[in-house]
Length: 213
Image (cartoon, rainbow, N blue to C red):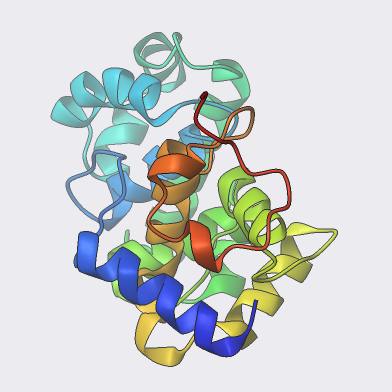
């Protein structure tokens, strides 16, 4: 895609949804962090069903630790990998209390030192909780970036770096939300909805879905 096409791509997505938001429910930076950790290899809908009741009783690191591993596990048992995720939630909560005055760190390197937190999770938290223009590359972003020709790459990190170079600064804050939502609802993996896609003419995908005659 040309630079002009990339700019037009985000202009159109912005026109349709000027203030995109993530689909994970949370009440503060801490619960956002927990929700994103729990969302690995799980759907946002499934995570929200579990965290709704959980966050009503534990919305701070202290309350989560007081709840204890067994009860946390019970709250999130409908989420995949719930055993290891429960351990991570308790462990990261203890570290936040012990080393960060119960506050969620505002830099990627420190966030990545927490149990269960990788680069993608850190980028989501930095973007949503602290308004930093980070790009969190999940399966949707990876697919859309490669399929459209916007920022091809063989790894999530390569795509992230390419997107940071390609996306005009004015779009960076909301870019990963626009791309996630576009990949989730329009540029889907098995059958992209090209006939209703608002940016189809800007996309370099050769095998676009066509409406049946």
